[in-house]
Image 1 (cartoon, one colour):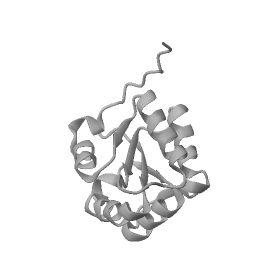
Image 2 (cartoon, helix red, strand yellow):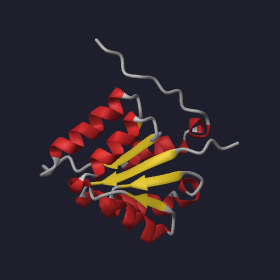
Image 3 (cartoon, helix red, strand yellow):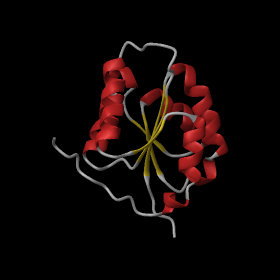
Amino acid sequence: MTERKTIGLVAHDGCKPDLVAWAKERREILARHDLVGTGTTGSAVREATGLDVECLKSGPLGGDAQLGARIAEGKLDILIFFTDSLSSMPHDVDVKALIRLAALYNTVFACNRVTADFVIDSPRLNAPIMRSEPVKR
């Protein structure tokens, strides 16, 4: 039995074509889950795959923060974020906050195609995710 997950999809501009190509290749698996993405990325994936993707605001306009809020609320199970490590972004602060929240809330997080493949191919994709609250130190 498949445990339906909520999967966040985000990519920096230079990585959007790679994420879209990955989503097309993984369409059958992604179709079994709830997808949410930042505005431009989500729209590109929806257009290329025909999948139902809830589109938030564009990353620089608050979409990264919206995804971070979903992580903090326990409403996002997996974050697939293809990052461009060679370019600085004007909204790097938002990106760092999103990555920080993914780490803090022990969220499954893939930042490139190889890791995304491992996540999506894992037999644990169909198992419940054991959430944990951040520990204050």
